Image 1 (cartoon, one colour):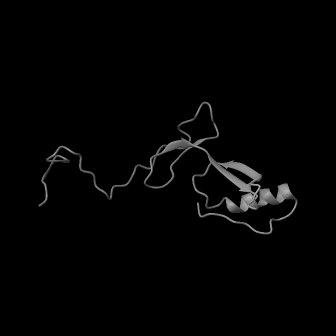
Image 2 (cartoon, one colour):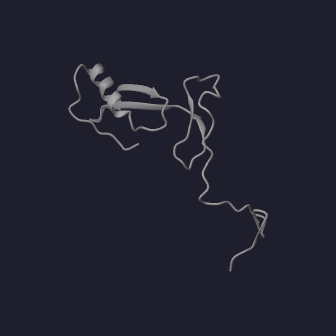
Image 3 (cartoon, one colour):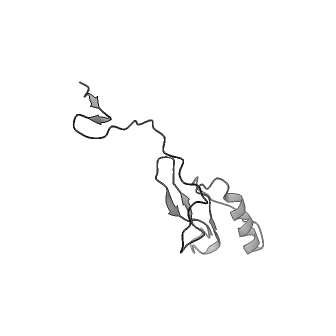
Length: 107
């Protein structure tokens, strides 16, 4: 049995939302600034998440037990799609040679 809707609300008073609705595209990246952290940006983790003021860090560590950080930098992109190549270049610069092996996650 389906409940009837009146003016966007169900009979119980709960607002009914369309599950296929799209989230708003968000604010213009240049429209807001953070006074204490000007390098942070307004980002979201996924299409289903809300926007938040955030930083995005990239690290390269020694995976053989010491967990020593060999390279690190901050990114203003919320996705990791294009971050592996610059990290390998930074790592090669810091070590003076290319790494023998790389282990990376998918984001």
